[in-house]
Length: 173
Image (cartoon, rainbow, N blue to C red; front, top):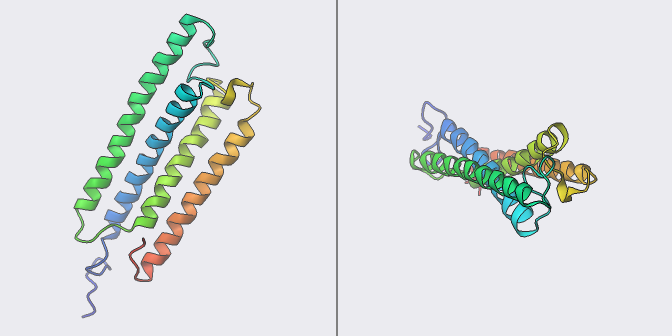
């Protein structure tokens, strides 16, 4: 016997279904993390725009209050998404006798980062017109899309190479 069980994994490798759960959890975590970084850095620290600044002006007290409330509620929802991802990742890790491979998880988290930014660019900026990067009338949407696609592509690359490394017997880290 070579140490491979009926599920096709060795004792030092977690089952494929747990790796999939971990990958989904890491992607969820990355999505929520990206949203929170967006709000904290772009909305609050740099004050380039707010969630609804395309609909409610930032230069009136009523508009600023509406935007800050929307930013706060959005932050709470995205904190929930981040915590769900972290909880699912913790649960997937605890269900295995051996550690989950790091590279596929890191890649999935990067994909989550990119997917949030892609969603933000396409849905919030282009389709709904909720806000624009730098409140400059959409001049930076192409750049935002490019960065989103680069993050998503880089994450997918790290994910795929991590799976290949893991398939060849390494820990994937």
